[in-house]
Length: 176
Image (tube, rainbow, N blue to C red; front, side, top):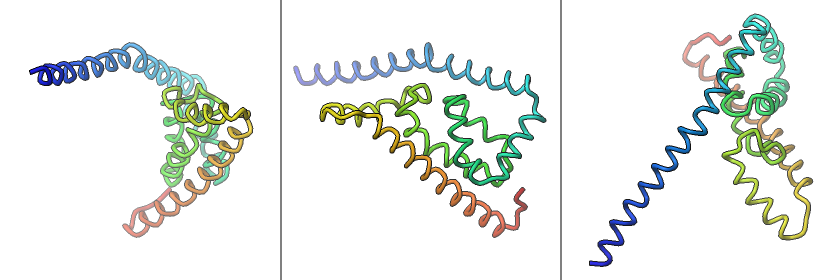
């Protein structure tokens, strides 16, 4: 009988914790995300779609700028989810590669800039904890981590773009 009671209590306790997490997200994360989206849309309206489109077209002409510089800029200044919105101004063929580069660079950049995606900071903190226990500085590792992430993001962005363009051409679709 005791085991049935403990099972029932554990079952309910689990859902109470799920409920607490949902309340925390509704009270903290969702308003922050909405605030960031409002800010990004405000900045876009103030600067103007045409100017932002020109900047994006300029960045979209260069593979290096599209997959190395722009994702870092987007994460640093717009954080999450704002960085995801930056890609909407790129030429169509660059959008999949940009999103791939974003996903690749987010965790390395969070190692030195925790504001980028604070919810994912636990990944870096786990690594940093081990390094700190060894009596070593985390800064050199963080810099190497960022460099590796940026290079990998560039490579993945280029490969994703090539695959996307190939598939579009294979399906007789125009790629801009």
